[in-house]
Image (cartoon, rainbow, N blue to C red):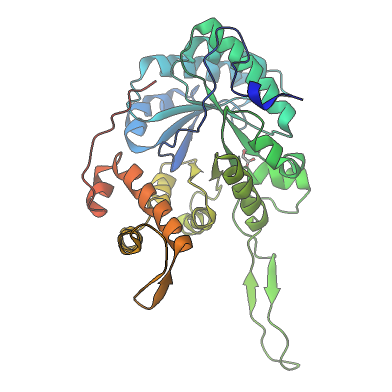
Length: 357
Ligand code: GLV
Ligand code: MG
C-alpha cells in the first residue's frame, strides 16, 4: 500500500517532482520511425515540421541484430535535432526482452532532457509501470533532470485490458495509453491476421424475410469494446487515450474510418506508420471548422452554462455546453500550433511559446 500523500513524492533522491496534471500538448499523430535506418534518419528534420510527435521506435519492426544500432541512432538524432514544439517520444523494447533495461539506461542518461515520453509495450499490469517509474526516477536523478519523463502504455495484452484501470492510475508519470490491435489480437487468440481495422467476417445479418429474400450484412467494429474501455480508464485518471497502428498503408479510406471512430469515442490521436497517414491523422484529429463554429455558438448562447436554450431546434444544456467546451478548447490548443487551423477556426495564431524541455 502506498499512501496517497506519497504519490507525488519523487521515487529517488534528487529526481524531479512528479507532474500533478498531464500537460495537454497536441499529439494528433505519433509518427513512428526506425532511428537505426540512415534513410529515415535523414528525413527527421522534415518530419519534425509535419508531425506533433516523432517517435523513435526500438521495439517490434526493428530486427534483433539492429536493436543497438536503433538505440544509438536515436541518441544521435535526439542530440543533433532541434525539435521546436514537436515532441520526441520513444518506444522501448518490452520489459521481458533482453534490451529494455539498456534502452532505459541509455536513453534516460544520455537524452533524458530531450525525451518527452517513453512508450512501454505489452504492459500487463500496474507492476510494469511501477518498475519503469522507479527506474526513471533513478535515471533522472543521475542525469540531473529538472522535469520528469512521462510514461505511455500500449494496451496490447489480454491481461493489460483486464487491468487497464490500474495501469492508467499506476503513477503520476502516466501520460496516456494506446490501443495496440496487432499484439492484442495475438494475445487474445483472435483469428485475424491484420494490424487494426475491421474484418469482413465480423458482422451481423439482417433477419430473413422469406426463403430466398436477399439479406444484407453489416460489418461490425472489432475494436469498439477495447477502445471504449481504454477511453474510460484514461478519462477517469486524467490521462490521454490513442488509437495505435493501422497496417494497411494503401487503404487510407479505412485508416481514416478507424481513426475517426477512435476520435469520436474520445481518443486524441493515433500512430502513423507511413507519411501518407500523417495527413489522415491531422484531418481526423483536428475538429471540423463547422463543429468548432457550432461549439462556440452554443458556448456563447449558454452564458454561465446553466439552464437550457434552443438553437436551431436543438436543446442545449449543461451537458451539451460541456461537450462544446471540449471541442472549442481542443480547437484553440491546436490552432496555437497550426497556423492553417488557426485560420480555419478564425482564431488569432500565437506561435508556440512553450520552451522545448
Ligand atoms: C502495436 O504495437 C500493436 O501490436 O498493434
Ligand atoms: Mg505491438
